Length: 282
Image (cartoon, rainbow, N blue to C red; front, top):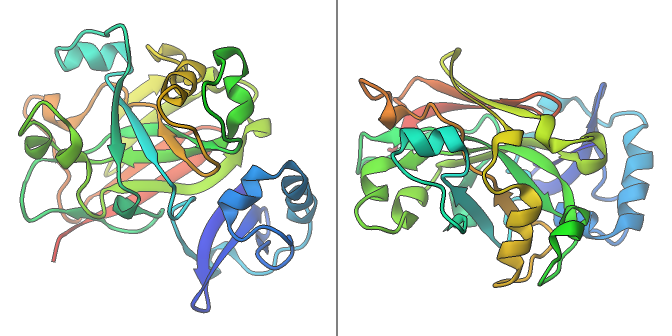
């Protein structure tokens, strides 16, 4: 099942996408105020699944998409998590994952413009798989971690490289407004038999620059969920961005950065394609 958050007629909604368009769920699934609340309740999710098989209420292009989860409580990102990406970055895989955070206000939807900031010309791309949490919890056993996954979506952790390396902390370069694209939809975990079989690709203006298999992760999804849960409890709607494969722009010779007029796409077979144009910050 594909689930989206969106606006229509000036109101926030969530719904399901099928072959005919969008099935409105906001007013049909009592007890779910938003998509995160829907994901948290297996009974409501089953009701949504039944409705998703029905007639569409309007065409897909008749809604204004929001980020899949518009305001997640936390967006936890993982750096240097593909072996080849670690090599190109001149880094070694450590004993523990490299963790940093994004603010939810940096997120944008599929089709929305990525903002190339005034403060830098080093605006880079990072194609990633993002995990959406459905079942909360703390001190999670890795053997049961996948039970906490509601589904998957595409993510572009677009980064302002010079700001990223102002200090040893990544934070500022990862938290410019309008740089974290998330979408176009969430594909529920029951649709993905084995996430390790997925491949993440990143294309700039149609040219493939990144490709990586999820089987190549240094720290896999269960390990990441369990590790982070020792510090903070996961909550429904939280986002885990699993890291980017090799091919990023600033490690190329010469470097390739996002510029106004360009389009960057993240494609994950079985999930979909997240596409965003690039514009200069006003």
